[in-house]
Length: 305
Image (tube, rainbow, N blue to C red; front, top):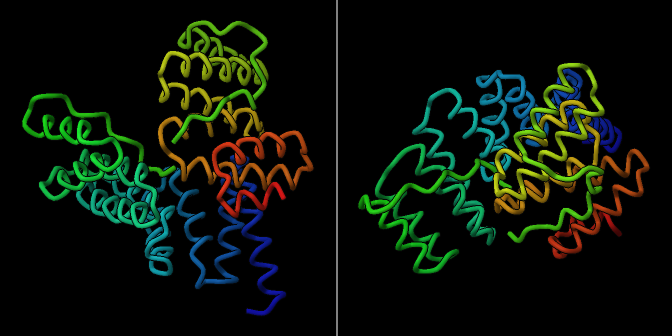
């Protein structure tokens, strides 16, 4: 590939990432398709287009793109996670579980034991099997110690309840959410705040909807309802896809759930967007989190150099 062609490819890929982060799915799909046409042997644009298809609800098209990405990079964690999500959505649970087995092995080989365990648990929830159960027990003992592995064993024999399945992503110490602006009103019940956000959204008051959804996310987080907090952030991003405060709250929630890879990916994207927009305040917040949580990550460190 010539330098000029590579610059065109890189520009198309950047435009795809920016459009995807801003919720502009058609523009993102067009940019990723352009990048693919310029460099068909590279996996990143295929993975990006696959993710756009998933967000658009076209699971089969997403699966096709993730398979193309994996043909070029068989151990790419993002593509494996996307492929598993597409297969699960299509009802192909056994194949999704097998893909998650591969993703768990990739995480473990890279020293990400917590992520490997989360993914292995998800695979087990999709398709029970003796080998898969033993893998979860082994990883649990490694991450949580003998008592954790014993709890998994009790689940297997019926003397306990199944632990909630972890998310597909990847992506574990909690990060302080002090980097995000504090709500200007007291945090009340999360359900009440979420109802306020949805009501404001229905009336077309998008700024109030963003604010109330962010407050709801903080309230749910304080109540230990991380999944609800993440849903509240997604509502906030619907009306304010570029808001660094919402993205940083999501980073904190991802870290609390042990999704370090996913948190790192969001920080990387947020840092690049801040650089493109010239938003030094957002960049400084990103760098605070990077320093606290990912001091040894060269890609993230480069954003703050």
